[in-house]
Image (tube, rainbow, N blue to C red; front, side, top):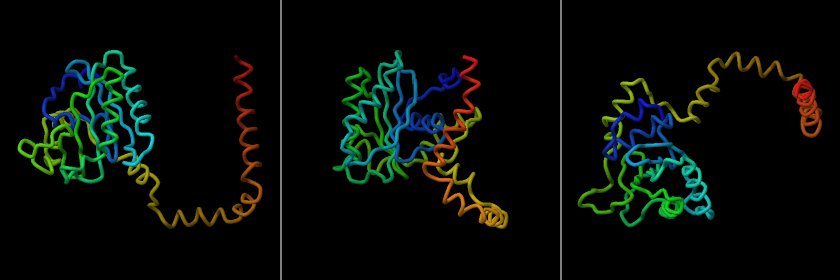
Length: 224
């Protein structure tokens, strides 16, 4: 993180959650985001795909996550945000409880205790540490509080924008905008499609590709 980011003061949960999309570049979906901390300062941000709730190797998953974040020698704690596909409606059913428990244990073993954690659904977010409806009413705070937070406003003021997810960006880049041109390209390849299907795939294609790589790398080998 740059110095400019470090100077943004975060305090409430919505401020910390607003920090995440700007660091990742998009609003996470089905993700776990872990943020290292050094005292009260935020350090490295790491995003991981959220494993299925019945994932059998969740402890190994948590160990890898903790080992990666612990590579920062200045980190002495961490924050966790789980972005799920549904809101947390049932107080008795903690979403992804097994994964969260495994993460807490793994981070503790790497001397990075979890200082706070949240679950973020499509519409609401709430603390994973508080199930008291008295102080944290269900289903939680509206996600608009994240987008309207001081931190999100500050990032936008500084020129940071939250974009679509990588999958959505790729779909936008490869989407056909000129159907007539796409059809002409498809038709132009008709005469080559059958010969390639017979001779251009499988072992022959692999051999040609490896041969091209070998030919290209020869000058590099001669110069070393």
